[in-house]
Amino acid sequence: MIDLRLLREDPDRARASQRARGEDVDLVDAVLSADERRRSSSVRFDELRAEQKQLGKLIPKAEGEQKAELLRRTGELATAVKAADAEKDEAAAETQQLLRRLSNLVHPDVPVGGEEDFTVLETLGTPRDFGAEGFEPKDHLELGQRLGAIDVERGAKVSGSRFYFLTGVGALLELALVNAAIAQATEAGFTPMLTPALVKSQAMDGTGFLGQAAQDVYQLEKDELYLVGTSEVALAGYHMDEIIEANRLPLRYAAFSPCFRREAGSYGKDTRGIFRVHQFDKVEMFSYVDPEDSQAEHRRLLEWEKQWLSSLELPFQVIDVATGDLGASAARKYDCEAWIPTQGKYRELTSTSDCTQFQSRRLSVRMRDGKHVQPLATLNGTLCAVPRTIVALLENHQQEDGSVWVPPVLRPYLGGREALEPIAK
Image (cartoon, rainbow, N blue to C red; front, side, top):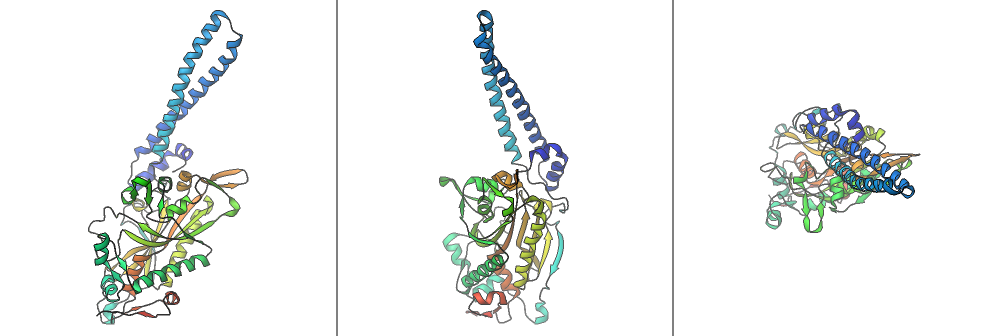
């Protein structure tokens, strides 16, 4: 949720942000109109209450017709005060409801446009030339099946499409990735966390996932709970309704959790293998910082993601995501996209978003610096989304005989293995 005072002072900035996102510009004026009604009804309520109190002091001293007139006016005021109070509360509720529909203000340097209008900031590593090596690369599913690592047929049998089993070295590879990612995050000063996969609506709505992303969320209506699509939700809610002393910041958490997504609107996309699935595990970084430090923290999160992907020796590019693909909470987002040989293009593996004060204002997470209390800034960054990372590892590090080379960073967690060997030809 954006600052209502900022909206009043600079509505054109909010209109430009909505326009850049491809979202409803008129919503800005609807918020301002509701806020004006709230303020005017609040003034009227205060004026009526003041008159009511003044009459209350005069009545005991009055007599005869004067007292009767005061009592009559008191009755009128009681009705008027009640109506003004109701109008004030109604306008306040409408203002908040409309304000929560506004997305975060985009950073002025974010490229304007849709999903394909991103800016490439840098490219690290060089995709392998399999033709020069004399063989055609296999896709991750074929490799995974030969390794005895991935079973999508039984996943579909048990749970439906876009579900899977990781078996044998596939399961061990996930555990290796998670342990290595948590080790990197811990070394960088993050507090390791295991978070709930089910959260209340306050946490889900507070992080902005019940707006435009609601169609992707699994809800347990009977229990009034939601399955998280990312541990960002639980981590953002961790300090909900708290005031944090400024000298404790930054607070950094790295959480391992399952994630659940309906993948609404993805019919026909990435149907083969485990690139786009309904359930997966992820290590997520999350930071609480002073708002003045949010942009610097955003770059730090990106550097930790780059460090991780470089340690896996994957070729990847870093992009500045365009306005229309940001998500409601993000003012700016960087993605790291790994090269997928059999697709012949870069695909998203990690993402980091600067949510400024948008989430903390909704969740009432504040910082206190002396006597000054204000919403702090929240940021999130994927360190390792397991299935997509497995896809990139298998395809980029495959050998002609169907084995897969293991990067040194993972070997301590795989019993020293230097390669994953096929069990089926």
